[in-house]
Amino acid sequence: MTDSVREKVIAIIAEQAVLEPGDITPTATLADLGIDSLGLVESIFAIEEAFDIQIPFNANEPDQSEFDISSVDAIIAAVEGLVAAQKGA
Image 1 (tube, helix red, strand yellow):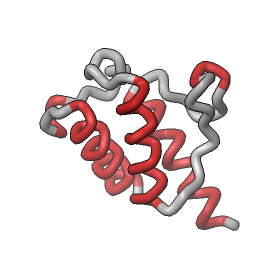
Image 2 (image 1 turned 135 degrees about the vertical axis):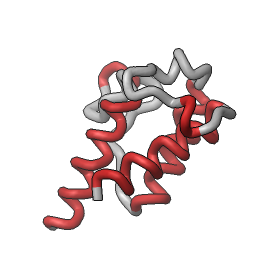
Image 3 (image 1 turned 90 degrees about the vertical axis):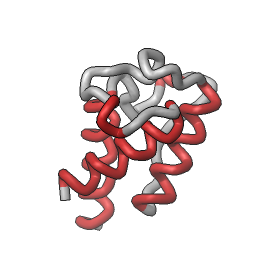
Image 4 (image 1 turned 45 degrees about the horizontal axis):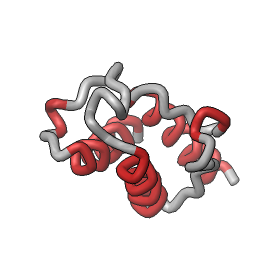
């Protein structure tokens, strides 16, 4: 599951950043990749749709969100957690 989640999340982020998936590094922030607040919201929607999950994210206060967007790896880990929780529910 992990590789699949990782690959899908990276593909979504790469699409928003207009980069190739291979250009996305695990420690990169969305700002490093040139993704602005609108791109962030579009990425969140795309991730929710791809995994059929609800992401607890407040676009007006991203720093106050339970969903960690501090790096690509943090986003992947958060998505993995939500996917696992959904399967366990």
